[in-house]
Length: 132
Image 1 (cartoon, rainbow, N blue to C red):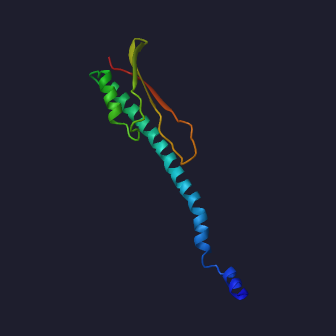
Image 2: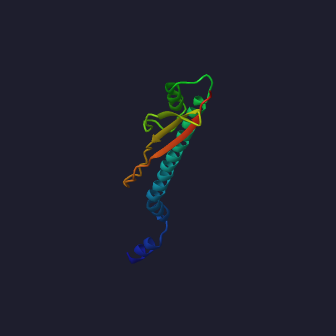
C-alpha cells in the first residue's frame, strides 16, 4: 500500500492539466481585457473619423446645412453603436469669416467581468471655416 501511494505521489501524469486549470482564468481575463481596451480605442478612432467627415462636409461648396453635417457624422461613425450623443453644431463669425464648431461626445462601454470601471468619455471638437 505504501509503495502504491509513493508511486502515485511521484507521478506527474496530471500536472499539466492542473497547471492549465490554474492559469486559464487569468489568461482569459487578460484576453477579454485586451478586447475591451481595443473596443475603446476603436470607438475613439470612430469618433475622430466621424467628426473629420462632418468637418469635410461643412467646408463643401455650396454650403450644407447643419442637418447634412449631422447626417455625415452619423453615417461615418464606426464603433459607436448607441454611445454617441447628438452632435452639437454652433455657428459664428471670426474676422469676417463664417465658421462652424462641431462637438461630439461618446461614452463607450468598458466592462471587465466583476471589476467596475469608471465611465470613459471622449469628446472631439473641430472648428471649420466655411466658404464664402
